[in-house]
Image 1 (tube, rainbow, N blue to C red):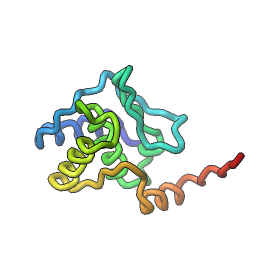
Image 2: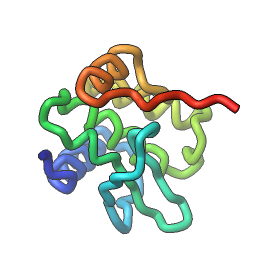
Image 3: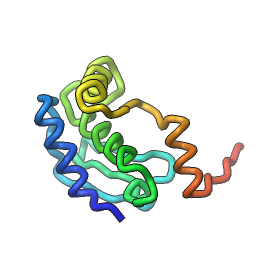
Image 4: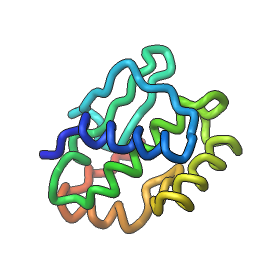
Length: 125
């Protein structure tokens, strides 16, 4: 099991190096309840939750780091949504650090995740 604090500190240091103006969260939390989302930023608590599944060492570390970067960008002024400012910071991280931050889970990430964790059965009303 990977250590969220170690990975978060690594990502924050990298954002510092390329001058992304994130705000350090009050708390990092591992969530066992998140099954559809990889991460979540709470603006009211100023905390970031990451699904425990991403800490699994069978998954590529970049899946965890992409999610940490994504949530940290949400802490920047004007980036709570996935608007143009969020996208500009994500492009900068992708270009300068070689990551693949996006607003959705890629097909490749879904395949990897599904190979390890059986997908939840879809229910329709």
